[in-house]
Amino acid sequence: MARFLCVNPYIEDFAAYDLWLRPLGLLMLAEALQRSGHDIQFIDCLDRFHPHYSAADTHGYRSYHRGKYLKTPIEKPSVLSPMQRYFYRFGISEEHFHTHCHEMPMPDYILITSMMTYWYTGVRYTINLLREQFPGVPIFLGGRYVFLNPQHAERYAGADAIIQSITINRTLHELSRLTDGIVHDRGNAIDYPPAYTVYPVMPAVALLTSLGCPFTCNYCATPVCMPEFSFRNHDAVIAEIHTYMKNNVTDIALYDDALLYQAEKHFIPLFSEIAAIRTTLSFHTPNGLHCRYITAEVAKLMYKSGFKTIRLSLETADYSLQRATGGKVTNTNFITAIENLNAAGFQRNTIETYLMTGLPEQTVQQVLSSIRFAHQQGVIVRLAEYSPIPRTPLFVHAPKAVRDEPLLQNNLVYSTLFSPFTAEQQKIIKHEARHGNAINRSR
Image (cartoon, rainbow, N blue to C red; front, side, top):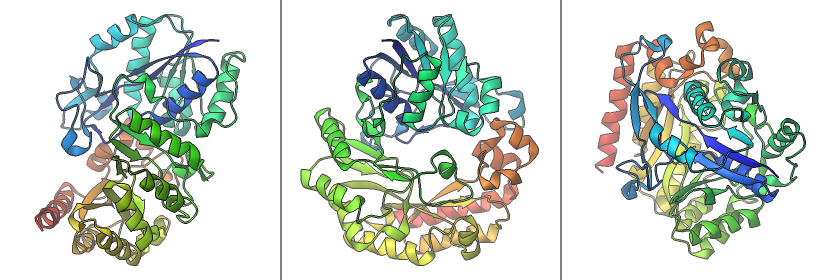
């Protein structure tokens, strides 16, 4: 058997916030490797809860364990010089990273994950640190950045090999090839719980009850990364919930892209059982919920199960844009969802909705009308600035410079340098959202 070091890398960006961000794929892979008899070491450079290097607001009880990362000012990459903002490395100090490495035995292989394409400089920095600490140890890089832009990852990340698979079973198969058969495909790895036991403390976790999404929104990478939609085994999810309760977890972020799809088959039976357990867990939906599936029954079950942070996916209230981007929601769906949630016990001014701004061919008036429509329903608006994602249908419309350089795919960078809206128009949009939010919060 082999010894694997699994690493969640630093983030380098202008801003980053821990909205229950967990390296779920890497943790599921670690669990599968452990069940195959391999030894696992783990470094999460973004672990806010480690007792030795946690941020000042680590516990964040008032915000369900969300919070700020530790950050270190660093020099901006030259391509980002037009951005008049400070650039940071988010995560544990380099000193603590080295200490962590010194305390563990030499690994046989290092596995590092990745997330956003525009975070690749943090990945490269992490790989360079690992090379210093463990010279000669093969480093394999996987994750969403690699899957969406493998050519760039091969050229710039600095790993010995990249793994383009997203699903756990395919990743295990690829690891088997890279390790001369040491790793075995476990077959049913998707129902394994993430290996949160690698953390000394972890009061908030991420959970998947399904994989993929049945919709094909033209700005979203999920249909590309996971074209097959599937549900996880209910017994496996319930067992996972029991484990978290025993380990003092208080908050669970549901990472599903389509949590409520076919609710009568999945969500209703699953969460009816969870509600019957009478847990004290709080559930959160950072990815946004599909409004068309929030029936009165579903809303009541969400309230009974302990859902606390409700975010809905509206994206736009403009009918033509709704159709052009995928047609997953209508304004009627949205209004009905709000009414059902309100009737179930959720206050309207605690419900949030995502609205996209800066979509190709979107007008300022369409954004402002969408904001006003959402505010009329009494909810809080969260603006999501559009940025192009490789391999999505809208990516071909991005400027060549953006297609060639992932750092320019950052939503903050793209909205500043390439947005169809002027700086003054963006200011008006943000003011409209803040003003309406303030009114709704005061109700």
